[in-house]
Length: 80
Length: 420
Ligand SMILES: Cc1cc2nc3c(=O)[nH]c(=O)nc-3n(C[C@H](O)[C@H](O)[C@H](O)COP(=O)(O)OP(=O)(O)OC[C@H]3O[C@@H](n4cnc5c(N)ncnc54)[C@H](O)[C@@H]3O)c2cc1C
Ligand SMILES: [Zn+2]
Image (cartoon, rainbow over all chains, first blue to last red; front, side, top):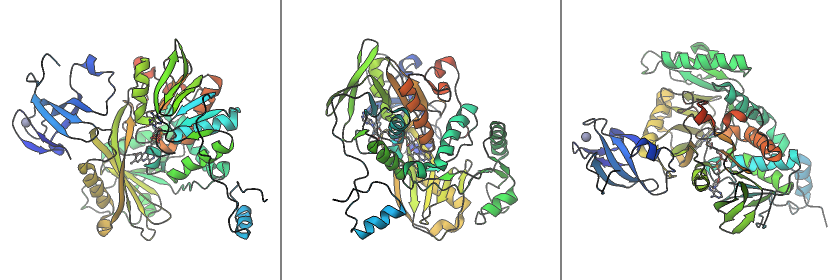
């Protein structure tokens, strides 16, 4: 079970409180991407909390959540 | 020297009983890869193996290898709940799944192997007005197309399923059901083994522990594959590697719209027979059948996000068990004996991808998602014809990759949420 912390309102809860929204980035960048057996950046919605979409890094095989961030506050340089 | 016994029958059993069962031969050869073949199929799941069988059986193409990264039928073919039905919504789907369903009727005889096809009927419950409308629409489509499947009233549901919980206390009262009398299930592993055994007897090489690392093209043509056991040449290659297909095709500039998602299933301890047909329910989100051994085979929805893992998430387990108890509360003390997951290859319209892809000589058969077991015989049949002739058979044409760009989706998403 994924344990997720919303970077906006700070709620920490399991995956049932959130909704997965696909790969992070602009549509044209994510459209034709193969989902690797690795960490992916995704959009997630704080569905039962503050209702904000935020960014999350998750490993697609071992399901570890390594980071969450508010949009505009990405933990890497440059845009997306 | 006695002749070895290959055929499975009551006579061969009697003959072998007299000789201490010393004359049976292995069901299929564990082949070593050769350096070239006429046709190479990537992935020994149901779809790959069935295609190889029909290539050898119907088209006289015996110089075929099926290359498998793991073991025969160890992917989703080993992990499904074996449900078979053909009451889909779109005519393209009804043609393909209907062909497959009719091949299942005689598959045990054709392959000389008991695949335990059990057409005890399949009941898809409607608990809401919207479900009633959706299932009625499917029933109408089925009637027009000639698929034997229709709506039945609650009284008939209860006579088919006397143990189904009913009454005004239910959160989801029953409103009716879609019924396919020849729906049912088969033994999933047996289907892979049966095709493998016959394909192998017809000369097909099934090579296990042989992962394909890349597909090699020379200009506009396909020439072979690079595998964990060396290079193998072939002028015709079909990728039937389920969720592993996209990374094999991406370097050739072919983007397969496939997302991997985990789907789980459960088996209970054996119980006295109480459940004849397969029961599915979209609103309570689960489905259940009882095997000849008495075990309940239970399934539900997928995990809520993409995953390459075969270990599923916890919430779908809880939801699926809750669904089963909503339908049959008296099962609350029954123990689940086994639980597992598979990573299924979901497409945007929940229909498979069948057809040529990229350089000439390359084909795909994947994207079967949560419901491709039932399609194995039909899909093998049509894709074998495609590989043998180079022409896409009419049944397969609508399932080509170009349908997404052309906006010709074969949308089965309404009916395939939990209804596999
Ligand atoms: C829990 C669960 C329940 C299901 N229930 C049903 C059901 O009731 N009814 C139904 O119709 N369907 C059901 N399905 C779906 C069904 O199992 C699949 O659609 C079907 O088995 C797909 O068959 P396949 O041959 O395409 O894929 P697979 O059986 O997954 O075969 C693909 C093979 O390719 C191999 N491979 C991958 N990469 C490589 C490589 N690089 N080189 C060589 N080999 C490779 C894999 O090891 C694998 O053996 C269910 C699935 C699951 C997980
Ligand atoms: Zn929040």
